[in-house]
Image 1 (spheres, rainbow, N blue to C red):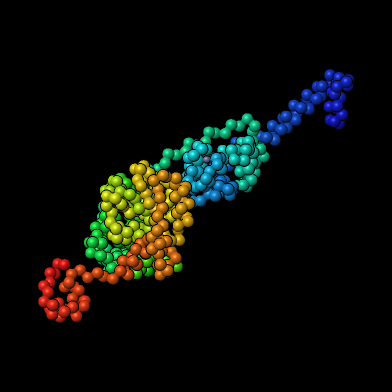
Image 2 (image 1 turned 45 degrees about the vertical axis):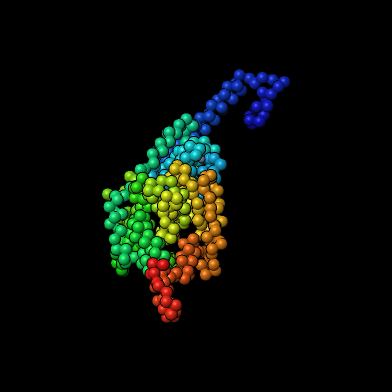
Length: 434
Ligand SMILES: [Zn+2]
């Protein structure tokens, strides 16, 4: 009997099916259910195998809207959280080692299967099928009564890497060979007061110099330490400078920049830095000076060199201290947290080509004591400073252009010899201190 007709037979106003027909129907139903269950059955070891090979970073990367990016040498990935209305990077993290994702904003967390179940609204068997397809594992089906294991707990964040302080001291020698330091000492026409500040400023920021020996020669780097507000050295930025005080750019040389934590990793100094036990968290350049100048307004610039030149030009003191964020990408609320926690006034000084970006970033930081000052790179700027000039380029050009002011009449007479006979003729007395 064809099924369509058989079921129609149970319709309203029709004769009831006979006992035999009812039994037949029940039997059919049970057999169908059994067939379904046999089909649905899959060996537990296949599920285990899929759970074993599914990598969270690969699964999440299949969804481009998350914009997953590798960070800190692959220890962590970050992206835009797909489970809440996420406005940018930083909240959503993926940890390959633990095979989990976690959002620090909406608390979404779990393993690859959980991600698919939540994101694609899949049942557990369908999530397993999805993964089977991705990893070329044949999945017939999975048992209907299988309960997924609870997701592995998210690991607690690793402690911040703190390097020993003597590492900083060891690199504060040899500055006489350093291109940037020599430029600062020899090529800027500082006034007397500014010149007197140079050794103090270099010492205060712990500016260092380091030679890295490689097979094909030595590499000379200026070393900028990142020491946090509590005085713990976190890492150091290595940069190459030319004799004219400008950075050696990537297209001018292959090896132009490095980081202390990378050097330690490559050198195998696991007693100093073990990425399984500590996490590198960068901080602002000059952050350790906050303690020394507890009430000062923080003047924040992009590069370490700019902070140093501005500190020499204008000084760090009770009213102002110069810090650097070391790249516009670090201009985030997270990086500025120590300043916000201390309720500091903060003034941003963007480079000339970064004004628009810094204004956007400042808005995103959303801190009411944060302002932005573009006067130096707009009003003081001249064509000769170049389109990418930063505040220090402008200030140094102004210093170098200002004619040296004669200090005493004696110095004036040296510069303008004709004055001496004139003074003698008029029978004037000279006080050399005037
Ligand atoms: Zn979220």
